Amino acid sequence: MPGVSFTPAGRTILEFSYLSAVSSKLQLRQVSGDVSAIQGTVMLKWASDIQAKAYKDVTPRRRFLVFVNPHGGQGKGKKLWKEIIEPIFVAAGCVLDIQYTGPVSSPTNAANIARNVDLTAYDALVPVSGDGIVNELINGLTSRPDALSALRIPIAPIPAGSGNALSVNIMGPDKVLDVAYGALNAIKGQPMPLDICSVTQGSTRMYSFLSQAFGLMADLDMGTEWMRWIGGIRFVLGFLYGAITGRRYNVEITMKVVESDKCRMVDNYNTHQQSLVSSVENDKVTSTTDVRMPPLAFGTTDTPFPRGTMHERLEAPLEPGWHTFRTPVQFIMAGKLPWLSRDSMMIPLAQNDGLIDVVMVPPRSALASIKSVDGQEEGKFFRESDCYYFKVEAYRCTPLERSGYISIDGESIPYKPFQVENHARLARIMSMDTRWKGLERIVLDS
Image (cartoon, rainbow, N blue to C red; front, side):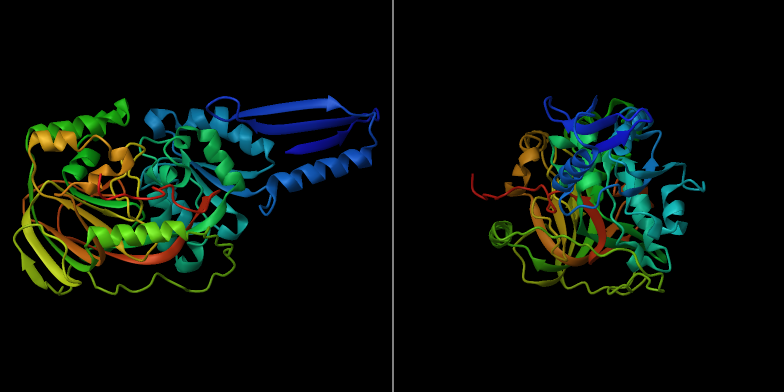
């Protein structure tokens, strides 16, 4: 961001801020100099031209409502904000309102702030945290009387937590380690649509943008919370423990299946990737009309659900329609985004297609489970014969054991039946590439 100022003594000072890509991570550089030898109007025009080229179609000096989780990233969220992110925003001339987030019951909880704030005062919501604050923001926005309008304000996540899955899907697994790049994404990204899911348990309705996990994958998320201090390695240790001990979970899951043939799904994905154009949404929050969330098309867990064809073991492909599996599994993972962490692309075919991707794996040997860890960052797990993959409109998952974990976007919910359906393109996120950082092409046979 260039700037020209004039001193009382009649000197012309040029100040220039930029992000340097010399090292593996972006770094803020600021230089200034006396350019009095050049006519002031010439320097003003030069600075204006440089800014126009740097921002192109992006509005500079954006207004951000920033949510800093002081406990995010093993307690480093506040430090990252003060030392790296805030100076970049200030150098870019951004207008900042800063909120340090608190627990669920506090007025500074991100959901409570999003539920009540005047969104017309901002260009984006910027969580400096992991995926938990993003989940809180979406659930706060969806609870407003103007929910459909409120969801159009973009969320620009800056990866400062232990998960950062949304940031991985926007920025890629390499750049997600760079919070400066996350700040640049907020400054220069453009809105793109994000599907969100309704998750119901009886009369309780919540929202998910990332994933729903049952079985071993939920245990990794929630059962290793006590090891959060060691970072992402806790997921690996938890998986190895579950694999060695042969964990299995009895469940009944009913799904409205749209597609379950891996070959057809891969062909559709590759065709989509080849023809993919950027998906920019420039609509802004301009109305406070009473436009609440859409009604549930499939009801709640208290509503009768078609059971369809019954299965006592996992199998695919299936005919489109309702199917119920009553069987032990190692895990069920469902969601809307390819990456669940920078080391795991568990749902590689996920896209904004209006459907939910469901992955189910039966109980496996310790050796098979440990081998499956290799190549998860390339989506290789999808190619294994006992990885069953479904595209569905809705599903209901009923645990058949007394206790355990269910994880929604990394947050624990009660261990009882839950039901999920998708709402296409309701929310917005900031992205400089306006497309998910999934695989360019998937090869099924290798």
